[in-house]
Amino acid sequence: MIGVAVIGTGAIARSHVEAYRSFPQRCEVRVLCDLFPEKGEKLAGEFSISPGILGDYKETLKRSDVDLVSICLPPSLHAEVSIAAAEAGKHVLVEKPMASSLQECDAMIAASERAHRLLSVVSQNRFKTSMCRLKALLDSGAAGRILHTTVNSLWWRGQSYYDLWWRGTWEKEGGGCTINHAVHHVDLLLWMLGMPEELSSVFANLNHANSETEDFSTSVLKYRDGSIAQLTASLVHHGEQQQMIFQTEKARLCMPWQVNASEEKENGFPEPCPETEQRLQRLYESRPPLKHEGHAGQIDDLLSAIEQGGQAAIDGKAGRTTLELIIGIYRSAATGKTVSFPLSAADPMYAKDSMIAGMPRFHEKTRSIDNFSKPSDITLGRDMGR
Image 1 (cartoon, one colour):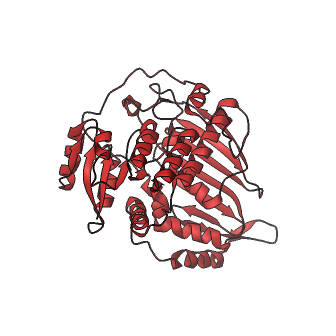
Image 2: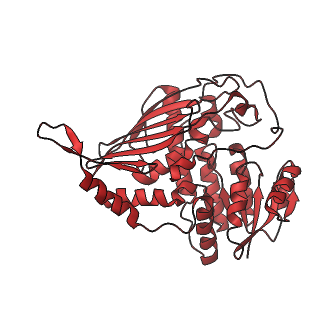
Image 3: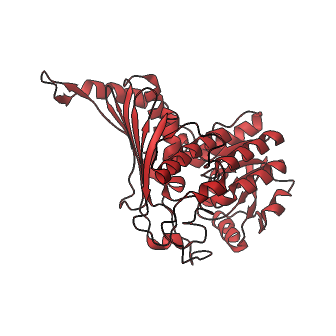
């Protein structure tokens, strides 16, 4: 039985606890840790479990009955707690983004390797049947070469969203919508297409006056094979529609799932091609559904890796690559220049302090609260999994 501690019991921690409870014969949540212990007690009550409730993560890491730690804290604390957990002999599952800087990512990876412990970064959308089907279809080449990709990470957040103490600051959140909302879309883009050769970006704060950071960014990515991708991250789009569109030689493949295909008339204008659509639909549906999806799917994979002495499907290096692309977006947007990959350790954006020094402060943060007065539901971009 794998003993689990969840450090940080905010909204996303519920997804972790619920996922662990999908495997009652394999793991048990033994500790809930939060600076505000009453939040841990409330979470335990919601799931009718009786873990230890602690207020200090260092005390949590001393527990000999804890083998795996889920870190659900603000991004600025991910590296500190992940490294301490590895040094205490614990496996780590850390929420997105992996850390606030590439330097911190490298330190986290090094700590897990020294301790011979697993480090996995939450990428739950890779563990959805629809995404696995789309990935397999693109990889098969059945739709032809990918020509143009559009990724829309479109959310809406009100002014009070940034009143929470750690949000809206470069120091504590690490950035705005690009790093903390589009991070999963970036991960999926990299999973589907790989790392681009270069990119150009712009960002802005369009409508959130209590935030130093951006609430909008858009980027154009160029790949070595000549294909182009566009990525937009936003907190000002009503409706919160998440979307990925792959324009290939033979069809348009979308998530949420949709397939459209065209063939040309004599004059070059398009007409529908139902035969191609039906063929691609059959290929899409031919992949069997996953037994566990989302956080449960990733935790199932991580538990199996621990049990069998293997590797997690999403490791620290995958999490680092996602952050590298995001840091590249920030570098391009802040300097107005095209950025090429990979970014080196000599780059000013590699370390947290020098990265922060190069970022604009769109607004001064003037309101700060420890917690909202009552818990509320959060939106998780579930449309991406349809």
